[in-house]
Image (tube, rainbow, N blue to C red; front, side):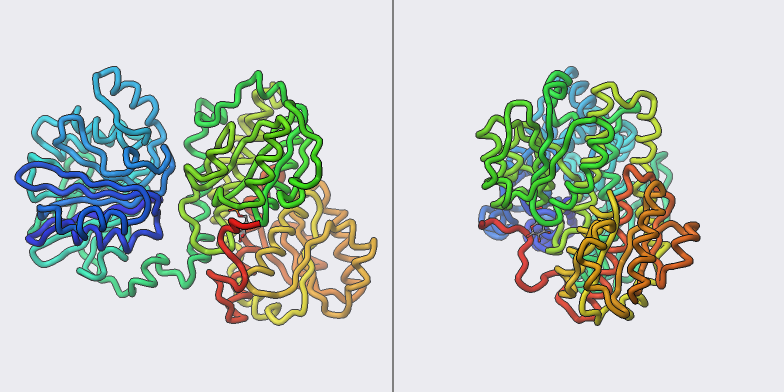
Length: 607
Ligand code: BG6
């Protein structure tokens, strides 16, 4: 996720662009840049790091003349955070500059075609193919060049474009990434979201997918992919800047929970090619896969629990033994590792000290390391032999949600990938890929099925402690569900393998003890049902998470959370969603600081 802005009017553009980018920094902050037009020339200024570096470089914009420009703050997905990879990107003839938020899924083939046609690339980004396509299609009409360019693109994009042949104009294009036009007096704007606009205007137009806009200081023209002009009435923004940064949600955590369908889709879609899972950026060959005798997954916190969930699918489809180890333990355990060990390192930030230390220890013993990270160019990514990025976008809330679900999604895709390359899944691959592609919709269904969660939170928010129980994947999800509850609501919560309760812990079950029972795997449902009966007979109150038509569970549980019909092999990504929401609303009931829980850090870079 990145942030883009555009301005055209009578004022100096650079200071306005920089101010807008500061408001969008929560969307991405590893590099930034502006492109401003003056005397029919485009000047580009880019930096790595925060917007403040760009302000310093341009004298808060005072050193940059011109009243028309575009700007970008980056969250790297393709290409590390360097000045070359920062946006805006210039066409070879210097006539066009482009900023982009989104992912171009077919950029590799377009890049090869453009290089064959003689275009020179400065960066590793997917975005740069866009500006060369515009140059290629330009015959004097920018709108026509934009329409022809977008006809070649597959993926998501919110684009900002300026052309030195069209002074005073900025162009905006929207497909599956947010883009809003701001209507000023004698000036006009565009931005990724309203936070960059509300200080200048509250009259906005939300562009729709497939729409283009041409903005000058006194006019805004919206048109579709046929060039047909569209009329669109303005909307008045009532949010304040704070609320706008959270997309209107009360907390970043709730915003990020609700972003999960999009984040999981962004992580899956670019990796499904010709009916198979392909990790272009990973570089793990079939020969190397056949050399793997065992897999160790290592991480901390929720990333560790993501590994616990992914283990089942990887073992089932690749038949390779998988151990999941806490990084803080693995590094001191004198691990049995050799050149046949694949170490999978999971980290949202890519900077967790324990995880990095464990990774170094295992690499020193001969393991190859495959990193699953959300931050491009992070320490874990740099140390890894192979890297697969989650494309969740920046995660601001300390308690991870979309970071976890996209990590599990990558592990599920890896399971199918390994099974396929080892020739072990045959024609089941098609069904498995269909199940993976259904995950974003099923997450949305999990939202829709559980409108009762705020009421359930009122019932359970004062509990002294909560038990989460489940078997197999349900147990792995119970671990993450319990952690979510602890870290944001401060209620004591523990997860137990459902079959383990009777070996001791059931002694703690007393009258009205809340037990959250996960029952999302039909093949072991009867077993978990017997565990529910066990705890209920000792006075527990059971909140069951299961399918809507699971009448046996429905008949014994006191309260219910639901999941849609999901493939048990890939269920963790959906099962966790009601538990994330339960923890969120319990924490809200308890008046906790949900985005910044006490004692916690988003990334623990010390041991
Ligand atoms: C904790 C975070 O500090 O570190 C958790 O609060 C996270 O959300 C854990 O799962 C590991 O962090 P990372 O960045 O390595 O996934």
